[in-house]
Length: 126
Image (tube, rainbow, N blue to C red):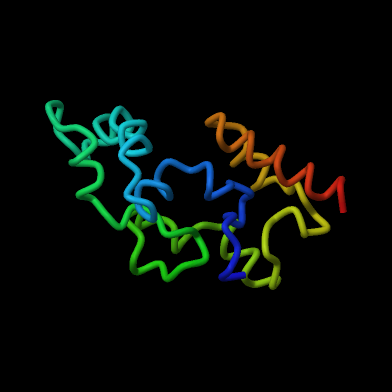
C-alpha cells in the first residue's frame, strides 16, 4: 500500500494540488490552493502561494504516517481506515464498492467525483 501514489479513495496523488505542493514544492499547485486556504482561515487575505507552502507538510499521501499530515482528519478517514483493515490498496478493490460511505464522499467536490470515476475505470479494466 505504501508505494502507491493514489489515495484509498481513488484520488490520484499526481493530480492533487496539496500533494504536489508538498512533495514537489510546486508553486503553481500552491497558487491553486490559495482560495481554499483563505476560505479555511489557514492563511490571511493578503497571503499567497508562499504562505500555502509554509504550511508543509500539507499532504504526503494518505498511506504515509498520519502524524506528518497537515490535514489532521486524515488519520480518522473512514475510507482509508476501512481499506487498511481489509488490506486493500483502494476502495475500488472492495466487493462492496461503491458503498454508502463512499457514495457520500463522492457526492461533493468535483475531485471526489473524479476519484470515483477513476476507481470505476480501474475496476472495469481489470
